[in-house]
Length: 150
Image (cartoon, rainbow, N blue to C red; front, top):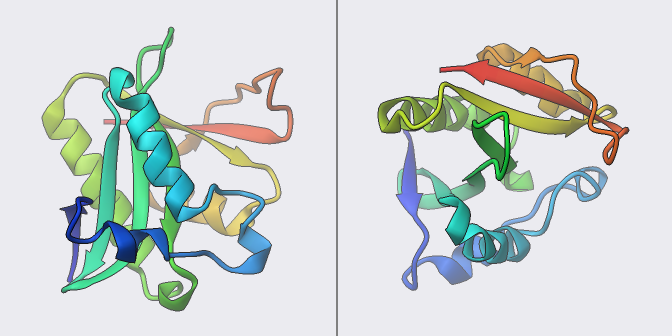
């Protein structure tokens, strides 16, 4: 059973060694980098989620607020360790994160910028209900913006 857990001193070392497959590394920061980003984005209400299957840490996700309009949650990073992919954990975890954000209720939507060639990630986001917003950030022309309405 998948659950969201807090990353703290008791599990940070285990979280930092999580990694994606070689072909995914250009799409995501390292696990240690994701943890550092969460600290950097504290002023933007960052949420660092550990993703666990029972007692085993299998992934990480980072959500923060957008700094400017449109005001929404920004799903910055989402990763499932290479040893645990293909088991549905990503789908379950993403649904839990969306439920958490909906309950928190500060914004009406969640956005994510996905590299155009990251087909597995696009498939996952579309599976849980994210839609292509049609927006292309001029600073990130190789990314597609997806939005989920809570």
